[in-house]
Amino acid sequence: MKRITIIVPCYNEEEVLDFFYEEVTKYLDPKYDFKLLFVNDGSKDKTLEVINNLRKKDDRIKYISFSRNFGKEAAMLAGLQGAKELNSDACIMLDADLQDPPSLIPEMLTLYEAGYKHIYAKHRTRVGEPKLKTFFALLFYKVYAMLTKDKNLSKGARDFCLMDKAVIDAFLSIKDYKRFTKGISSWVGFEKKCLEFDYVPRKAGKTKWSFLKLFKYAWMGIRQFSHVYKIIPKLLIVLAVGLLGFDTIYSILNDTFSYRILIYEVLFVFIFIALDAIMKMLYEIRDQGLNRPIYIIEDSNIND
Ligand code: UDP
Ligand code: MG
Image (spheres, protein in one colour):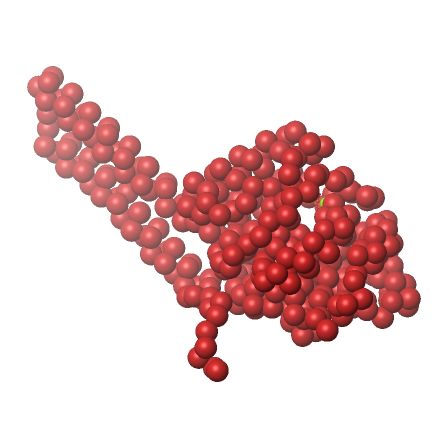
């Protein structure tokens, strides 16, 4: 019997967890050995109490509880580590607020049985979502693709997905302190299968993501998967060379040309070139520090 762990990050979700449990358990086919792993991300409300009450009636329920709020990325990582420790063949990750419909679980499992290792869900349309959020989300995907040169980040992809154990291991091998799951998902490779669904509002409770928090998260994602700050010295070089050329031609035409000024101007460009080199070195140190694996093996017969 295949072991499937359902990972649910929870931060202040006391209002919705009972609904979530009722809904998700409708789709847990008994031909699998399911575990429901709730990760309580330092909730200040009665989330942990609700989880403990659910545990009393269902021994498939597992939980991990953080000492404080570490953020959804940390909760997802702990969930993946937990799924590995539970010897799961695969895991399914979804939000507690029922914005990721548990009714997709059977279809995910069918695709998993058909051989897909990473099945993710995304919004078909964004109807119902606040317009401003949609605008900035679409802008983010454009800027992200441009700066990271990663065109594989799927627009509107949720963190809602099924990963088989090879994908779980690949995710766990990424030790980035600042984690951006969507970027990691694309980075680790593996053929992905996408399921589409329409936007569903939160069943109860409030979103934990303010506009500022989302913006900072998106910017962190771009920084983690690009060398975005390298643009600054490069722009300065282009600007300085342009102004220098203009000034030289202008002074020749007006008979005010001076070698001394030209030397100062060229030195100015050299400072920006040096800044560019320093930035490059800093990124090399950063990339080494991230300690990402050099490759991810999907298949091999080395140990046969
Ligand atoms: N979440 C979490 N830690 C946080 C913020 C959110 O574990 O610091 C969980 C939250 O309980 C929910 C999921 O992440 O299960 C998505 O959060 P939310 O619904 O607030 O985000 P939105 O859907 O509004 O983007
Ligand atoms: Mg939500």
